[in-house]
Image (cartoon, rainbow, N blue to C red):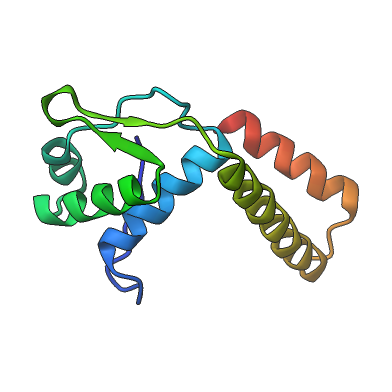
Length: 123
């Protein structure tokens, strides 16, 4: 799992982890039933304190995005209708932001769509 942490960002690191995992689940990058890295492993991978990842996972569990099952691990839960609504809202917001940036760069609709398709394939 690839996460990007920006220590200079105003958002606390545990919230950055939470936000990115939530986004991956909403986008379908992390499917229901997917086992997440252990708290210890993700903390080591990101060079963060164990407590930081633990806090992010606890909040994700409270958001009903994941289930923490002790030694069995943490797993992505089935997306609820509310989460599906959040995904739609998030995608619409991201699309609007992309359109604004594309227009600022002078790109037309087709160039923007092609860029999204290329990025989708490359990820």
